[in-house]
Image (cartoon, rainbow, N blue to C red; front, side):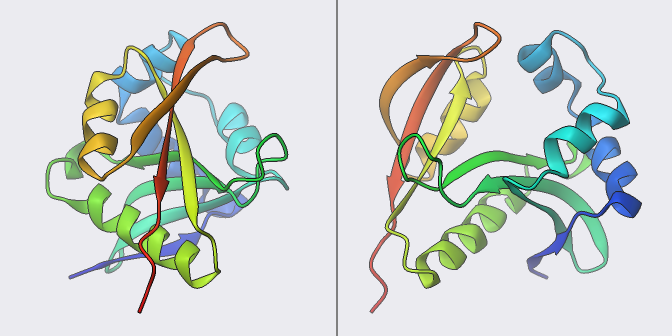
Length: 158
């Protein structure tokens, strides 16, 4: 069993909302509310700037991912969200999904990617550091949160 991606559409957005709301701790850290509304998820995931996909295990929706191919501020791709449904965490699916993303970016000729982690999100910092991401700087988000910026260079494929 391996993970694959499927595009998120307006018709399947309610599934993404359910996955995001299964992570109430993250929602509290990100915006002081345990649950998100469909309209705000639509704004976040169904826009023209980013690519939003489901992480699927065979036919089961187990997570969501949202990324920007090139941030105009630094010309780097950014992985804005990688979230596994609360029921499926701890089985290595986030690691598999990231490996698939990295392979896809590598095939497109990109050399690295960046992420931002809210300072209070210790679990996420540990996860990304375990995948080889290195801290490069601290920034302040639009809503005043301290964000640790991490970067990972992709290994060159032979």
